Length: 421
Image (cartoon, rainbow, N blue to C red; front, side, top):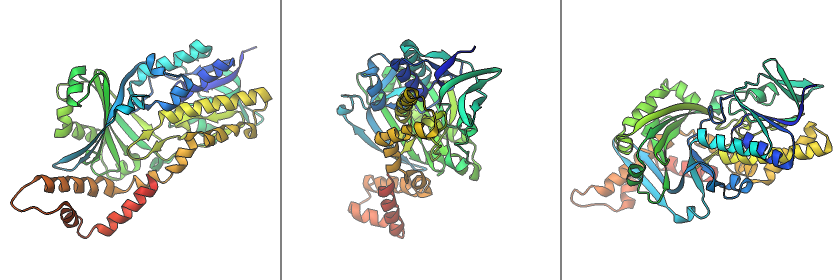
């Protein structure tokens, strides 16, 4: 008779590994199935992880995990057609305790999955899960090729385009709910990176760009500093990309050739290119009989404009799924009602609280003026402040002149932004 597992986890990303590590530490028989050749082989993200969630699971994880740099510099750059303006925030308190790290997923995900294996979980890579196994309208396992593997609980952690969540009847895919992220890894000497981003002692920077970089399509761009490379990329809403008939590769090409970006990556070597789907506004049903959905597969992501958080949400949801599975296993009740405890845990923690707080963000961030009018306005104001041609006006007067005929719309956007972000 084939072995039956307590829990099978589909996907060995941060959410899956967090669930597997937690359950293995509790002493349960856990199988984690990964489609890639190894954990992280197919997983893509911009490259920044907020530390709070994982630090609860593995205290001081950064002392052993393959993190790149601790982010102490936050930069926001507005790009117009001919100019740029950057806000630069630096804070040494972001180091103690660390607020966020830049990471490379291929390294980090392998480390995290191996932590779960060391705790007692079983990991099988290079296996595609084709379907769910059902009995009396309850999920009782997975189907992988000709193999049928049974479990009391299945945890789905197979990413934004979750086929398992769709097969469970918990998800439908709409283009307007997703963004596409494109990313390049540019290899550079560590000292060069520190000089260009004003860093010392292994500090890191996260620089966000808004405006011309997306051709006024809702979205943005980023550069994260690694030890000896830069993670550079663009995120845009898929439906707007289609409507504007813009090819994704054009955005990356033009972004790299922008004088502001070209100076930062000069002399670098492109060593990796990737793209992935981001569930910007795509919420999934979280549970059904015998099954829980975590991380990107559940659409657990918060974009507040400045912070794009998915990995900490994934890790926290994996931990919550483990707790819900533990209770179900103890009661031997794997019904939808029993597993609803998972949602309660997410409500009590920061995951669903933050998603509720920023529930208006996805709609507000699709406001086209954020990517056209306002970057141009910021750059024009700085231009007026910098240029001297005889007599000068006060900043307030310059602002009034630049916003002539636009003030009502700006006030409305400001109010909406304050409510959403």
